[in-house]
Image 1 (cartoon, one colour):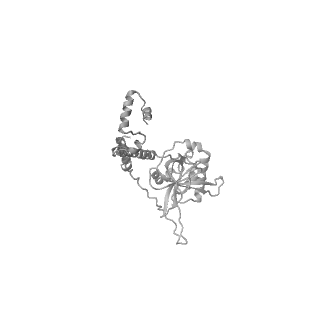
Image 2 (spheres, rainbow, N blue to C red):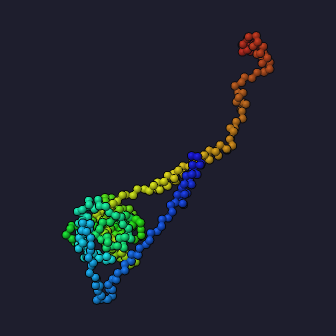
Amino acid sequence: MPPAIVLVLVAGWIERTYFGKPLQPTPPQVDTVSKSEWIDRTVSDAVVIEADPEPFEGVAEELGASPRALQRVRDDTVFRSSDDEAWFQIWMTLRSDANRVERAAVREVSFAELFGQPRSFRGRLVKIRGTIHRLQRVAAPPNQFNIEGYWQAWLEPQDGPASPIVVYFLNIPEGFPEGMNIHEPVEVVGYFFKRWAYAAKDTVRLAPLVMARQPIWRPVLPKASDINALSTYALITMGALVALTFFGIRLANRAPQKVARQEPTDLTATLSNIELFSTSQALQRLSETGKGTDPDQTEEKLQ
């Protein structure tokens, strides 16, 4: 791999790691602390006198429950017996008219809209997006509709703030994780019920409460950025290995070459098979060779 490509890959990785996308502006926070005056338990005869509910206006065909039942629902409270009629009517609507609910053209709403205008949205279909961080099964109170329980989800709105929307589902998709520490992005189409009071760690807080048949869930796949990061690391590693290999070869070529050492010649072993003659014998062999006589035969005659 050419060094220039390695440098480009390294520069790209540094840019994505240290000079990534700019930070998104933090959405404005909503004060969810309940302002309602609760009964002072230290006073034995303390009571709270509630005002009569205001008449509820709305087209029955667009509502998940009857206007009369929705009129009895009170915001900024926990579940009360007066909520039961509208509560179970909405469940029956979700159970029987599931196709109509799924096909309905529903406007997506924000946390601030639901929190600030609970009466305007009560009993009407809404669409929200966010991430479920907590999901558990809860039992339903005794009822005549054969509803034994439902799923309670705590959803962080997609566009903030960092305050939950509580969603109750009749069902959840197969394979959907459950527990107190999950992170599943979903889309929810359901009926807004009320601005519900719950006991937080610090005080009593309020949250929009929505009722839906089940979440629209698309399992999260590995992020493209994670895949790109792994590919970048792999390319950098390969480039480093190629560079080290190239450097090692260059270093090896520059090292001094060793000359093979020749062992000294053993003259005794070399001359062991050579026949030695005296001077007179050598002259005699030369003369006989010139006459065409075999030197060995002549030597035998002389002996």
